[in-house]
Length: 294
Length: 291
Image (cartoon, rainbow over all chains, first blue to last red; front, side, top):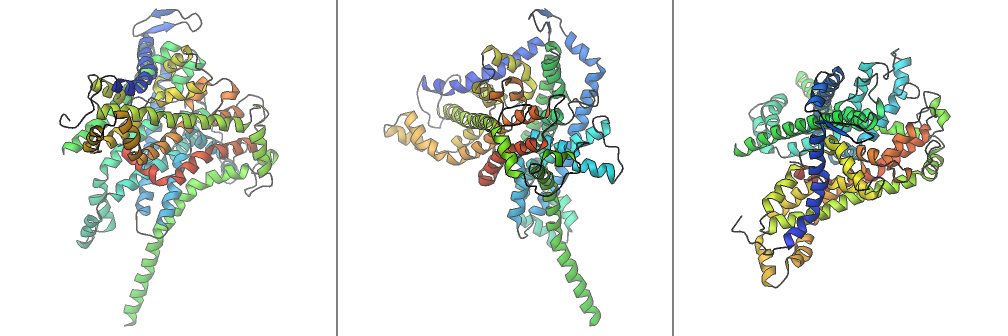
């Protein structure tokens, strides 16, 4: 670094980083610090009086069955979304990576849904499965005799949320798997073919191991998505119903903070989420580091 | 001989079937993506009573233009804000986030890569760490900061907290580090100031990464939901996605599905157009920044 040519100026670099630094401190460090601080206090939402309560907000959460329910639902939700969207996207990416006609048309058709927002995905699936007007709900009820009432039935609600969230994530995974597959050297695969390895063996022995950085990256990103970015889907489709059973962690932070005005508990929940994200990120950096040194 | 011919024929047929296989799978994938969207589109062309009389007709109805005009000019009865207003707000928010982020990130990356100053490492790590925490997990305290600054129900409040994350700084930093330093040195010898170098040499070279970043940030900005849901309470600042939510809530109103669906189609359109038109930049931006 020191041998590189660098500009000499004393004030200019500070002026250049200033806007970014102001925004980072104002909207990142300050709120994060506030969340940590607030999680140790009990605040009266109207008077603004703060009482220090130590770890009480946390200990209350840990004995709250609602919180554990929310934790386990979020975990199951994130795992299901990750698994199903990765399997489907990988399968599609393998087909689209073959030398076939219309390949670029197929790729475009499978990539553009990346632009569809999580809320729109929620509204689309809500509409198809709405017990009163939904087309699929109608088929379920009248052709398959299913008692389709997802707002009253946890399994149905969970299934619908998972399908909507998976559908939304397909394009994202597809883009990365396709890029990963394109970087697998064709000569390697051909060599294996000449040596008599069948398509299944070629996939599991050569392509899949070479794809593992992409797979791992997507695993982390999909878990982050499943845990933290699916709020719009839950908010639009179930609002936590039936009861509070599908209120995932992020939804609960929002509801306890905004609707119930329990800022102490909401902050404690935020801090727990922060710790979860940091663990996931550190996990990812560890892996990338190992890959680089390897 | 005949036996051999039959075997050849069977092998040939198997080969044809195998060559169709990827097409069939891909069409199934496309159908999974397209059908849900088609239902929305179909619903946006019917009257509400057609939709309510489940199952709704699956063709394209005769009220397409009427529904979109109604949505754009008037919105739904329970909400009263026309979709055109919300379209404008979403556009301002998405452009503000993407352009704002690109500008401040270019400046920060320029300083961090091309200058030697005492707080360089500190600045770098402060920005770097923001990659870790999505806004969803610190939403309430951020709300409080924005409220204290008096930015609720304002475009600045919608935009500024969303341009925190460091993805753009990283992409530009990576790119700047690949620029040969001789160019910078030569510009100095020729008497150009650092800012002239930045504006006339470096920025034009960075066109491609800027375009990639624009696509990604535009979509990110357009699709924000939780944040505008928190800080916009006045209908004149609702973004499209918030509008859709408001159209469907309200206890005893009959949901005007045809308008909601037309609005949903309109909310989908701009980011989709951006991705389709800039697909190449989009893919390179995605796979380079996030890795």
